[in-house]
Image (cartoon, rainbow, N blue to C red):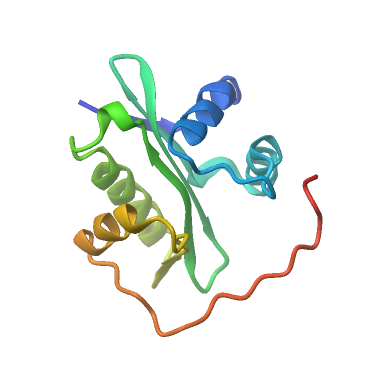
Length: 140
């Protein structure tokens, strides 16, 4: 059974390795800085999943009072298809609902077709919007 708990500082190396294994790290986002920024903003929506004492899943969430956001949903490749991603998202959704969050948004890279199927199976659909971004602080 997957045990879902809050991220702890000593989880950082394992979380970064998980993100690398899941191909979530890109050159323009430093994972250590992403983790520190999340912790600085509040760690209550940064969850990890353990199975047999191994860190095998993560999800990072945010809530700005208008929308919830989900980032870094990851399940170690050898632990996929066991319902862990569903469990991580269900826990994140329940935490966001408890905060009064009316809607969750998330971004998926257009190269990640596999995860689109996962999110659609969870009831997520493609919004008729375009994501725009502007880097304010470079990570390089």
